[in-house]
Length: 417
Picture: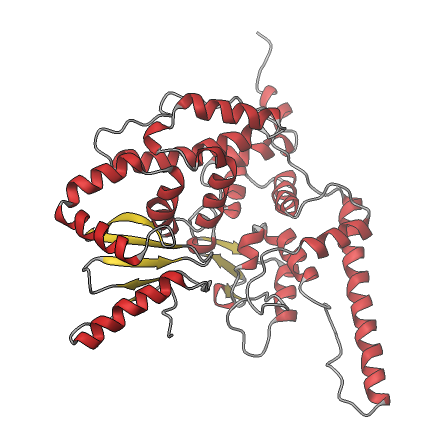
């Protein structure tokens, strides 16, 4: 059976009785199939206008009936409902869509709402939608089977107290509550008479201990040395392989002249541009202008959802020139396994920091190092804010204490009275 893909809705044709029978058998087969598609898809039935089956990558199958443009009513999961039962429910809903929608809204659980409404809504609006949905499901697993109308601030407060007792940081718990609150906000907005249960729930006080970890001169030297030794080991391994090939009359691989792989270029670019790891992973050659010596970080790949331009210093420019392929297009860094975008470089990073003897250094600290070095050399906080892409000066203020003699200069304006 041909299956729709790319998240598109499969529209099954009508017309003749044979086409109707085919449509019915298609949705029936999809309802009992065990396939797990790469992307969600939908199969519509023309036996009952508006009835459809949505199939998720997880294999979950759910019947819906569309009652208006952009508005659906969830009928229930395939397996629990037969196709005949789904058809009967769909016809009942279509007789009085307003009443059915109201009843459904009152009885919708958090888990159902995430699947049916909030999930598609947030996917269309936020780059980190998948992470947001995963956070909500993990943090509020005890509420997934609760009706939205039954969720109270006391329930939420009890769960967050349990999470704090289990060692979760206050900042993490506050973000969890904010994520849940956004779901409830959308529900309240679209449900007559609903009241937001968390509107009076106060955030937990967070200690002001935001970490600013940057490299000492000795750590910088050791990190670069570890990277250089790693690249040299890669070059030597490639040469040994090529010698082995030549001895057997086999073609070898091109010798390595600069970097053995992606790790050193990524680290050096991070140190010299302050790009976030996600921005680095999504960096394309089209966003780089080597002549103007600048990188344009597009809003689509920026956490702050704002386009900014980052200049390239000599080292950053040299790195990009050394790795630029003859036909530079698409991603600058491609995963050797998937040939697509990286999602992490944790294994390589852990090995490099261990070889350098640097404890407790996260990749994000390279961004802190970029900002810290600028501030310690007298660059204004406003300029650093622009380079980092911070939405407000609050985030950049964490580097204020690194300004040379800024406190002494401030009090020096006072004179004896």
